[in-house]
Each structure stands twice: as C-alpha cells, then as structure tokens.
Length: 146
Picture (cartoon, one colour):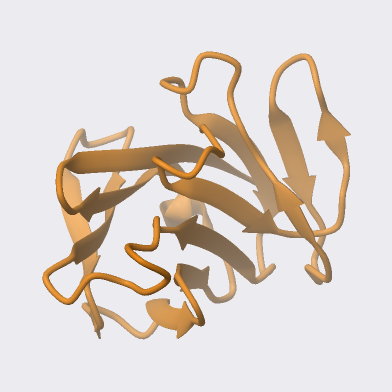
C-alpha cells in the first residue's frame, strides 16, 4: 500500500508484532496503537492475523484536495469471503450494512472500518476503494485464529 500523497494509505490499529519479510501483522485481543501497513509491490494485500474475540480497525486514508476532502468522493469498504468467493459491500460513504462491521470518520481524511468481536466468518480479503478523481484502493487479508 503506497503512502505518497497521490494514493490512499491503509493503517491497522493494533499493538505491533510485525514480520517485515511477509508483511504480516498479528493483532492482540486489545488493539492499542497504530501501525502503517504496506506491501512491497503496492498491489498485494497486507496480511493481518487477529484472534477470535478481538476488536480491530482498518484505516483508509484518502488524499486531500486543496487541504480538504472532495465533496463528490465515494469511499467503499468491501469484503471477499475466501470460502464462498462471494464479494460483499460492507459500507458506502457513511452507511454500514451491519453493526458488526461499521464505518466511522476520523478527521481530516480517514474512513475507518471497525470489526467488533472478530469471529471466524470475518476471515477474508477487505478492500477500501476510493473514487475521486480516479479509482484507488488498498487491500488487507484478515486471518482469524483462536
């Protein structure tokens, strides 16, 4: 996930336990700090492991236009279930489809996806898509352990 000013950047809210070689992060039961996750090529998803019952946050930082968020932007968090290959939209701008996975906004430019009380069904590929003026996205693969 690139971190320059022209692309979105993905942050994971967690306690740091990072394996730099595989871009994998293990999240504890109580996330407390923010780390910046990125993949070497910018295309592959970041791999994250979380324990059942933990609460996690995926941050999607969108680029600012003249110091502010553009009015005509679209931000979507989506999920691909690896077992069923079903692709689901979780949030669109301010609307969340469930209370288990919710969106919040952190000024000035962060669209944060919260997964409360992680369970096995949360494992899969999460993608933050930002449309303005062109499509940009970041991906993270969540692995869930006991």
